[in-house]
Every structure is written in C-alpha cells, then in structure tokens.
Amino acid sequence: MIERLRPRIQEIADELIDRVSAAGEMELVSAFAFPLPMTVIAELLGVPVADRDRFREWSTAMVRPALTADEADRADALLTAFVDYLLALFAERREKPGEDLISALVAVEDGGDTLSEEELSSMVAVLIVAGHETTVSLIGNAMLALLTHPEQRSELERDPSLLPRSVEELIRFDGPVERTLNRWAAADVELRGQTIRRGELVIVVLGAADRDPERFEDPDALVLAAERETRHLGFGRGPHFCLGAPLARLEAEIALRHALRRRPASASRSRRRTSAGGLCRSSAASSRCRLPGTPSGAAGRAHLRRDASRRRRRSARGRAAPSSCRRRGRRGTGRA
Ligand code: HEM
Image 1 (cartoon, rainbow, N blue to C red):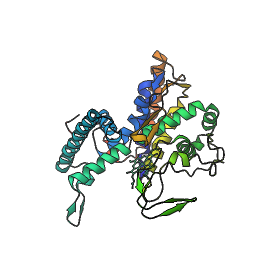
Image 2 (image 1 turned 30 degrees about the horizontal axis):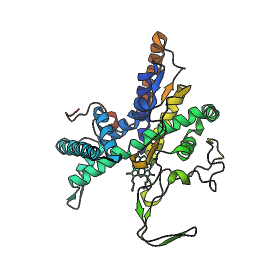
Image 3 (image 1 turned 30 degrees about the vertical axis):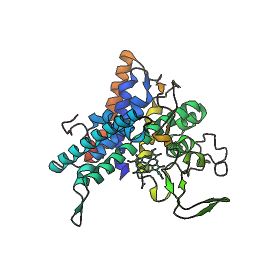
C-alpha cells in the first residue's frame, strides 16, 4: 500500500533537489528534509501543501514546551488557530469530498456513530505533527552521519542495495525519537534487580537502548554492512509501535538515494538541536550541504533540463501514485 506512494515521493524529491542544485549547495533541512515529508503527509491527508509553513509553526507550538507565561499564551493562540483551520477544512470536505484521508475520516460512520470534531482534529493534528517532525530529523541526522563517515558513505554509493538496511542502521545510530512518551506502571515490575512500583512514571530511552553494547557490537560505530543487527527500537515497540514506520522508511530511503546521487561533498554549519521536550533530536537543524557534482550557470541549467526530461519519461512509465497524491497543487481550501 505505502509502496504505491514511491513514484510520487520520488517526484517530490527530484523537484526539491532541482530547485537548489544550480546554486551548488543547499540548506538541507529547510530546502529538502522538511518540505519532502511535509508535502507527502499534506497530500495524503488532503491539506493544502501551500500552507506547509503554517503547519510547521503550529506543529512546533504543539511539541515545544512553553517555559514562560508569554510562550504559553503564544502557543495557545497558535493551537487555537490550528484547530480553527482544521475545523474549516473538515466543513469543506463534508461539502466537497475528495479522495484524501480527511474526506474519508469525516465520512466515517460506524453503526450511526460519527467522529466528533474534537476526535477528528486531534487525530489529524497528530498525523500532521508525527508525519513530518520525526522524518525531517531522520533525513537530517542520516545525511549528517553519512557526510561525517565518508568510508560508510562510499560503501553505500558502491552498493545502493544496502540502502534499506542502512536506513535501519541510521535510525539506530542517531534516530530522531530519543524516548517514548510517558507511561505509568500498571503493576509492580522487577527489572534487573530494581522494582518499578505500580503507578510510577516509566520513560524508555530508546536512544540509549539502541547503543546498548550487550546488543550491538561496537554500538557507537556506524556500520552499514550486512553484519550489523538491524532490529532497533527507533520506532518503539508493542501496542504503540509507530503507525507511520513504513512511510518514514520509504521517505528516508528515497531522500537518501536522491541526495547521495548528487554526491554531496561536505556539511558545514550543522547544529544539534533537541526539540519536543527532549522527545525528538535533530543533529541537522541547520546543515548546509555542498553539491559540487552539479555544474552551475548555463551548464547547470542544461544538466537540470536533461535530468528533468529523464525523470518525465520515467514518471510517465511508472505513474502509480494514488489520486490523492497526484492531485497535489490543484486542491485548495481558499485559505492558502
Ligand atoms: C523516522 C520517522 C519516525 C520515527 C523515528 C517515529 C518514531 C515513533 C515512536 C518511537 C513511536 C512510539 C512512541 C511511544 O511508544 O511512546 C511512534 C508512535 C507513533 N508514530 Fe511515529 N515515528 C516516525 C514517523 C512517523 C510518521 C511518518 C507517522 C505518520 C504518518 C507517525 C505516526 C505515529 C503515530 C500515530 C504514533 C502513535 C502510535 C500509537 O500510540 O498507537 N510516525 N513513532
């Protein structure tokens, strides 16, 4: 099912890289890692892609803890605007349904029961936030890891079939979700000589588990080759296992394939950031990537034209994305 999105995700990645490649360098997060998953989730849900910068602002307000009264007021105002925006969108989809997920959700009826506005807005807000915040950081962290481990990157360039397993190792090595959400023990639990009492707060630090030397040999090394164990906890485990894992894996694989094809030479000005109250971490909140393989000026433009025409031929052959994705850009709520 998710695999059907591949052609459209590839198309978005190509468009984004083409836009910046004549310049010979890109601001990795704002020019590529953010707009890629944001566009994908917006198209799937049926929210206008043109509003993606507003989603970023609302999403940050949802996940960043407010430390002062002013910050709390500002976050409240942003969240109210977010919910108002979603409610207007639901009304519009009820009136004029499309082939997107929001239209399907507003039409849900189960034994005469429908989803309330509150259920709908919290579900869609979580999907928007979870659907991009984490993947943005995964792409940024992964690119930074590859640029700072040139021998591993060369191995991947020599053998691109390593890419899917490399995504797993990159999530293990520097995954974007540092810890689970809060849990409370339902009963007393004995764990390695410690007792966690019923009712006590439990937070699993996924990042630490994924560097556990009892499980991973030389855990601080990035090893993309076949001998590395690929089962990690980066997407959680059990009943709350990440709903979006297949989509995130596909987006990361395509993003890395596309970015590496341009043979980026170096990363500069990369900065580490922890967001969402310590939940998410992003090594590449701002990373500039040099793309020296791309010629600039007239030669660069000719190169881009050749590339674009190759892709048009390829996408004409393999256009299989669902219509909710293909209709990108023609949908509108009148709010953009
Ligand atoms: C690299 C990208 C991603 C990572 C590393 C990631 C990681 C996680 C983790 C660790 C959890 C479990 C949290 C816990 O146990 O407390 C989780 C849950 C969840 N994720 Fe993701 N996620 C990613 C992308 C996505 C995407 C793209 C979507 C949606 C399209 C998504 C939707 C969700 C949802 C809805 C849950 C809650 C599941 C539940 O509680 O039943 N995630 N994710």
